Picture 1 (tube, rainbow, N blue to C red):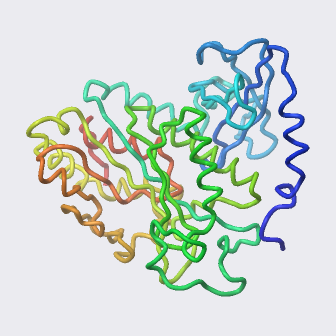
Picture 2 (picture 1 turned 135 degrees about the vertical axis):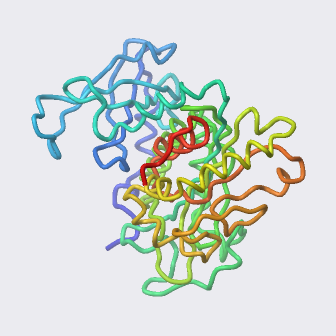
Length: 367
């Protein structure tokens, strides 16, 4: 099997000829949503008579669900636009629109975790919750092998690849830079990018975002990543432990603060939040990957800058802890903390909702 897809090798000069054609004042809108797995993304396109000025100008739509239909299924699923971005692939005036999914009864579909997340964010908005999420991933060939790794073998051990520069240390930078620019053009609040510890492993950060904006922007950043990788003929793998052995896993470290944490004397509120997180450790582990903690078992081993999945820990500048307090925060006595437990394939709606409900809304786990 080829390491890149055949479609990526089509003549892109020909594609640009068609993309450059005038649209006659029409607007092309790509509806984006999360499928029934809660992990994969879907999209389809629609033509509007003019460029929308706001999300309210984007009409609801629907899609048929030929597989995985729930019992009693009676028709199409509804796509409810919730956030609009510029389209970096077909460019202005065209749009990308993130959507919630409702079932045939106009109730939140089973995979619609945004609905309850938004409820929690609304209940906690007076705390001014800020988030930043660090999405790690591995570039992978169509043959299932990490991109640029020797066929049937392994590259040199970890060490020189983190933030590496040079042909022998950096693999796939064209893809990463293309994704970065696509996010900036689209209006995604991307903070930065860097190469990670394992060769062909990368990270981008989204934030600072407030409330529901955080998971919305991370999901769109993921869509853009998969879409850019499609053009280059490779896959973005978000598995928490994509390669077994002495290789780093992929996480989605989540930084969190409230207004009180950011102000003078904020360390007290940070410590209070960490104490609450410790009491609900098992609950958060269940929330922090797509399979109730099963994927994260392969990643949270206590090695490769992770904590053990079974034990909660916290510490200043400790990248082997469940919760890390940055050294500057400890020095200033205010700021934010980093939850290092979420896996790369987490649902950011579920992760941010769990943090809000534990740290701010006073919910107690049933365990």
